[in-house]
Length: 84
Length: 159
Image (cartoon, rainbow over all chains, first blue to last red; front, side, top):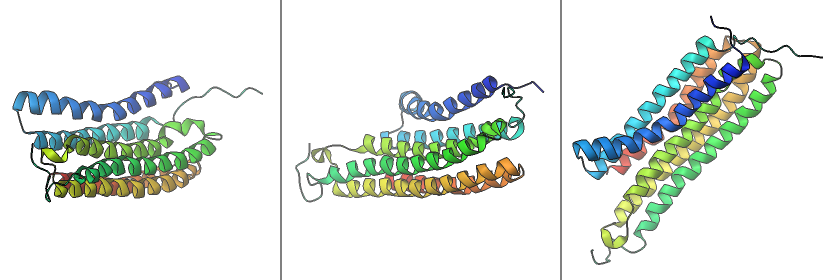
């Protein structure tokens, strides 16, 4: 078990929050313009809907990863001692 | 270009625009309440148990996801809106308004639930760590309320 510090907790939380916030938006527009409309050539409505569904799926995968990490790694941090 | 008529009146897009606005406004309201309410719980809990920060940040993340649901539907609707003269019928406007309201109010409800559960759950987890699994389950059940709204909204949008 690697010893965790407040800074490493911040890094982990920041990383997962960035993924959760930006992955669905990137997936939506990336899939819509490059995959569905660019490569496959589906219609506007179908590509919109499928991109939205995929974005939500990616969002929940990222959330699941975060909960998994928090459940198994969280609460083991060794914090700085309070100085009086 | 189509002539403005009874099927596609000039005020038709108003309903669609209101749908897109309602989707993001009400989802954000719910997400803001969820974030603020569980945030006060985290702030109170972290004074004594700062090592539980990562576990207790989960309600805030879940509240943020409610807003992403609203954002997805708002972007979908905004992409489908056009001037009435380009065959934007009144029916389309009503469907878009319904989709926006569906995801908006479901998100509002889910955000309220996440906020209240998150506040109590985070404070409780600090005293009894075994509560964590229960808190996650309750949060997931609150979250799917917003997901149901999203599903109905996407289904309406494809009409």
